Image: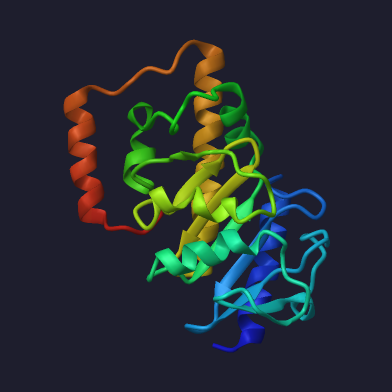
Length: 216
């Protein structure tokens, strides 16, 4: 498919993220690997609900801007592409409930996977990457310990990141993360975050292995 087709897909995903309240104003960014050397990026400083395919920028894997005005957080995306051979798309959004957990529980290293079968079956685990100042190189370096094993993660006190073998998988990971975060929040408010039995968790992890690496 052509650059124009992928640009249109990115625009559509931006609208879907905005409708689900995972993007506000100029927040967030999406990218797609066009080739081994060129990455397609959403523009900086624009409300993602209103961008057009013509707004897209192109950057090389070594961070040379070929065209357009790409996201200032692109180093985070480029790190994923360097570390993950299978990565074709990266979504960075600001899902409110997922971010809130990183603020409320600063000592957590990941969301409690043992509470919900969907966490284990759909993504394996949901780590919380350490805080990194937006726009800095550290946004990429803090991800390294989670790559390529984790395809979905919270960025502490900032947002979340999801990557996939296509744009739809990358989007699905973000939607899954916020949905799980909302369920955990509700359970916490109603009573407590209880765990599945250890033997059931072991079975679910084996099921995940048979499903494969993709986010569901």
